[in-house]
Amino acid sequence: MKTVWVEGATGKAGKRVTAALAAAGLAVRAASRHPGVPTANVTPVPFDWADESTWAGSVAGADALFLKGLDVLDDAASVIARLIATAPRAEHVVLMSAFGVDKAPAAAPRARVEQAVRESGRNWTILRPNWLMQNFDEDDAVYARAIRDDDELYAGSGTHRAAFVDTRDVADAAVAVLTTDGHHRRGYDLTGPRSLTFAEVAETLSAASGRAIRHVDADLETHRAHFARSGRPDAWVEHMMELFAFVRADVFDGVTGDVRRLTGHAPRSLEDYARSACSCP
Ligand SMILES: NC(=O)c1ccc[n+]([C@@H]2O[C@H](COP(=O)([O-])OP(=O)(O)OC[C@H]3O[C@@H](n4cnc5c(N)ncnc54)[C@H](OP(=O)(O)O)[C@@H]3O)[C@@H](O)[C@H]2O)c1
Image (cartoon, rainbow, N blue to C red):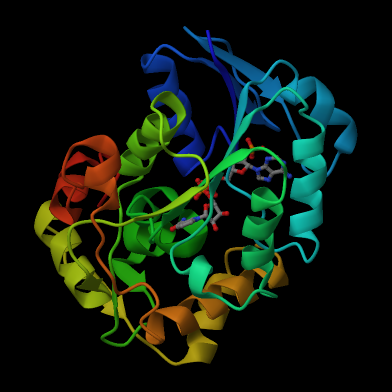
């Protein structure tokens, strides 16, 4: 049985990738700082990016790696290169990067992470999801707390659009590239079926929940203060501000056919997501 090591296995993407791979019959080593209990085909394993002594034991025996990477570390590319080197048996590395990184300057940190994976000497596949829909109900630091507590969707986006993708489709895409042939040395841009303004997102969440959720499109300093209230490090706050600069530059405004190409099914819509997100307002 093929063994896949999944990093960030308790996160929005990683937990769904773990479940989908296990359901597809692969053995999963589910890596995080908070490993839970084993389930069918899933072995939780301790892993901490900040503690290199945890790496070798965590990746041991893996035939493939699913990495979601590191966002706010200057030397993320070299850290990821060292991690891959720790897993000599892993023939295939799947990186969850982000939509638009292939168009970023080569010196941009995320572009350097992709480069490190391409130069790892392994077979590689890069998945580049657009903004994840599950941010709206699962990521308190970004959107979820303000939506849940105050009916407010904070996004300094103006009327610019993003083609939000359901994380379940990212997981289905990960299963496809890890279980079928033809995906080595390939990148895929994963989007939902429509590009939407954040005001349209607020309308859809309102319709699904019966509440009046409004898009808060304030000035940059208001948004910086909003993200700073999350308690996350300053570097993460600046990372969010950079992402919204990309939103305003229309980096995320593009629908692709890659979810259907990889999974054989249409990408889930925001309406599908809003109906299924049980903790969604
Ligand atoms: N969110 C989006 O809209 C979006 C869109 C496109 C691409 N991406 C990319 O996806 C990645 C984020 O994925 P996500 O949204 O699924 O993540 P997430 O939900 O924020 O999950 C974070 C995961 O990282 C793990 N983690 C945090 N610190 C760690 C550490 N020091 N060592 C080991 N594990 C650690 C956490 O595990 P424990 O706390 O259990 O250790 C958890 O499993 C980012 O690289 C981002 O660029 C995100």
